[in-house]
Length: 147
Image 1: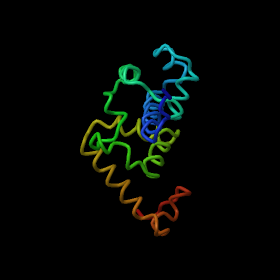
Image 2: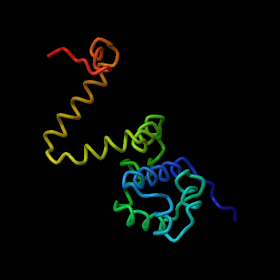
Image 3: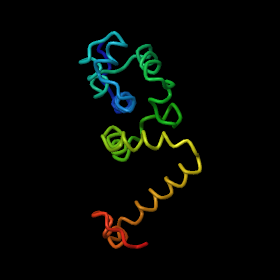
Image 4: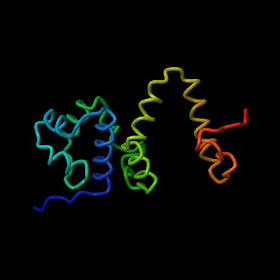
């Protein structure tokens, strides 16, 4: 019997493992030691080259301090992973970047939910204003003179 080849869902789960590991500031070596596997095996999991078995995924969730559901979409089980898109990859890559990790950590450190909502509204507003360069002119060089 031939082993199943990894699917888009396997790649997504692997990416979620990588994002969570990096968010915690944990190295591949450290996580792989906690799991009793080689870091090369962990690399294969994170890249979606190898499938992660249920027992191993449960252990990864324990080590990373998240429920197993963290590694899957919030969709129904029969559709989970079928709607993976470029947006999903873009967000995952951003969160795993230095800037994404820094922004995520800073946001998590904000305890007041009202401030979090206001910051989110500000970020959305700035994102929507990207088409107009006037709104950002001067900010790039730190000379905002709008008062």
